[in-house]
Structures are given as C-alpha cells and as structure tokens.
Amino acid sequence: MAITDIESIEVLKFRCREINRKAVIVFLVYATVKTTIALLVWFGLTSAMAAQTVRPGGGEKGRSGAQTEVETTRILFVFDASNSMNAFWGRQRKWQVATELLSASLDSLYGVEGLELGLRVYGHQTRHVQGQQDCDDTELLVPIGRGTNLIIRKELGRLRAQGTTPIARSLLYAADDFARTSGPGRNVIILITDGIEACDEDPCAVSRALQSQGIIVRPFIIGIGLEQKYKETFRCVGNYFDASDRETFERVLDIVISQAMHNTTAQIDLMDHNGRALETDVPVSIYEQASGALRDHFVHTMNHKGRPDTLVLSPVPSYRVVAHTIPPLVLDNVAIEPKQHNHIEMNAAQGWLDLGLGRTRSDLNGVTARVMRNGCELVHLQNLGSKVKYLAGVYDLEIATLPVTLIEGIEIGGGQVVPVAVPEPGALSLNTGTAGYGGIFVRRAGDWHQVIPFDGGNPTGRYNLQPGEYMMVFRAKRAVDSTLSATHPFTMRSGAPTHLNLTK
Image (cartoon, rainbow, N blue to C red):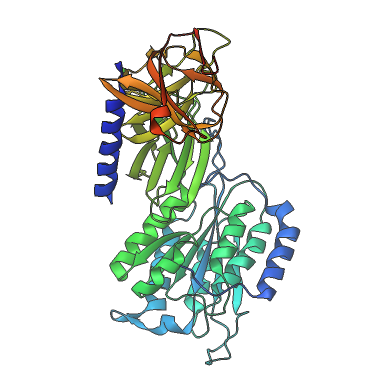
C-alpha cells in the first residue's frame, strides 16, 4: 500500500475506459370503477374483523419467537367452473379432473389439527353467452370452517362448468369470506383456473390490496393447461404453478396444499473470517427471483442467544437475497426447503477502513475518498476522518486532494482495522494583484502536471496543496507577449504555510 504519483492516476483512468468499453404483464386494462369502489368499501367494513399480522412470505410467528400452539390455517379454494373448463384434458374434461383430484386431497386433509377449509366457485350459475357474461357469477358454496372436507367434496360433485371467469371479483369477495371467521391465523387462497380474467378487472390489484391489508398471505394459483402467453399474467397475483397434464396437476396440488399448511423458516448466516455466523447489523433485502417483487426488508439481528434472527418464508418461489454490506453481497436463486429450518449462508467477513485525521482542526475535513476495487469499480464515497466497514478484500483510494492522491492495494482483512494516513496539506497564500492566465503545476516522476488552471480571472487566494514541489506559471491578462509569462517555483510542506506574492 503506497501513495503513488500522477502517472498511476492516468493508468487508472485508461484501465477504467478499457473496462467500460468492453463491458459495453401489464395484465388487463384497469379495474372498473365498480370494483374499485367495492374494494374500498369492503376493506373499510372488514379490515377490523379480518386484520392480522402477516409477514411477507406467510405466517404470523415473529423472526425469533417460538411457536407453542398449532397455528390456524384457513384455506379458501377458489375454483374455476367457467365454460372453458369443459375442454378435454387427455380423456376427461378439465373440471372433472380438477374436482376428482381436489376431492382426493380433501380426504387426506380430514382431521388435520388447526386446518379450516372453504370453497368459492365462479362461472357455475349462468351459462356463458358471448358479450353477455355474468361477472357476478361467483359464490361462496362452503363457508370456511373446520371439518368441511365432506361438504366441499359434495359441492364439487354437483358443479357444472358453464359461465365466465370473474377472477378479480372472486378474490375481492374472498375478503368477506375470511371476515366471517374468527381468531388469529393464516388466510390462504388457492385459485384453480384454466383461464384469465374475463371481466375487464384487475386480479393483481385486488391481490396486492388483500395482502397489504393483512387479510391474506400471497395466494397460490394452479394453472390448468394455460397457454404460454397467459401464464405470466398470474405472476403478479401470487405463487403460480403450471399444471400441463393430469399427473402434473396432482403433484402440484399436493405441493401447494402442503406449502399452504406449513410455515417454513430460514435464517441468514453472515459468515465472518473464521467461518462463524457472527456478522450482523446489516440491512437485508429479499426479492422473489422471478418477479423481482420485494418480499422483506430488515436489519439483520442476533437474538438473545446470539443466533441470527428467524424468518418465515414461503418455500414456493426462489429468492434473491441482498445483504447491504459495502459492497453488497448478492445470492441468486436461493431455494427454500419446505417444512424445515433453512440456513442461507453468505460470506460476509468485514473489516474497517480508518481514514482518521491527525488533528481535530484539519484542512482535510470534508474531503472525500473514492473507494474502488478491481481497478475502477466505485464501491463507496468515504469522508476523511471517518471509519467505515467493508467486505474483506483489496481496495484502491482516489482522494480529492490537490493534487489527487491515489493509494493502491489497501488490503482489508476480516475483523481488522486498517488505518490510512493522508498527509496534511500545506496552505498556499497567493497574491497576483491582477487577472491572468496560467496555472499551478506539481512535479511528479520528472514531469509537471497542472493542478489548478487560471482562466483569466484573478487567482489571488488560498489553496490547500499536498506536500511536494510546485511551480506557478502566470501571465497577466493585459500582457500581450508570451515572454511576459512569469514562473515561480515553490515547495509545499505538510501543515506549513507558503506565501507567493507577485506584486512585490
């Protein structure tokens, strides 16, 4: 680690230029006024009854709190009985396959502690007529409650698919379906559909509102034989699963029900230089990898036992985890294993760069250092006089002194404090007595490099210059001959004043 000359700065600039040179759905139109008004009224009436503390990713348990009682999970199946469900899927119609497999799953859920089930169906009451679809054709057939498995199964057996697809309105009315229940718990919607919204309303907006109000956790959507162009439209509604055939639907249905019933926990282990999960107090962001939606944002904390805080996450999507160290750490495609405690490890060994000043009243106060790595990648702007934590690694400094000070190869180890001292500048008092052209030059590696240009104004004043050999070249503005240029060599010493008076 050494302070280098101006030539190093030129090399750095060239290297940066070379690196830079080489480096070189919206778902539907809008929610109708009717739906918007209904949404506001519905939330106003139901929020007091249905409000619950739900963390992004599901669950009510705190990050580090132990759960001593079985948490109530309420699952509302929202089932598509629109006319398109009459299409054949293999040797059976879609609605027949869906009702048969959902019924089988209901049998396996009978008697599960803490589980409440309900059924809402749309498209089953009014026959579809082109241009005259009934967008109010959505009905809560089985209110959410315990032991409703057999009732739901019987209702599924009576269904006939014939109507339209009012998905947004069905999700909206689900707010009231959950409001009929009582007590804390997780409210989950599982939407089973083969088509997209048909009533010019916005399921994404409704889903976001339900989640932000704490009425539901992020819904699950099982798409039955959907065309590829429609699949992406459901990503903003919830956790989308694609079922391309009967076997896939059966497997996906089991996965989704399992995910809906069971909380999955995780902790982010910020590993120090000794391989221990002891780094902490770092802001962390968790995004869904596919959609980019922010799922959580918090400051990493150790609990009273000295362990990283516990998160409740849905194991359905994969995640991008960003630890906002300097520079940030990013993990892509983080998969969460369901029904177990997951450890997300990030190598976050850090040390401190101490740019302390030798004295309280310093001319370097407020001067900024550009902290870089890999030659020219800007990592941070750090003021002289401060101490900042960085990931362990090798960094370069470009400090905005006059002239610029470049310090290369600063190695910061995990747990280390690395002090870097910048020489105190000297104070040049300059008096030219008149306006003019020229500048102040510093000598580095045998050449003279301009530090301060004179642009025709009066350069009289004070200048803080780093220690070194300097020369001032000056020609008065009124002078008309280059031979009237004056040169004045001078030396700057750390912390010492220098006077240059051309009027004498």
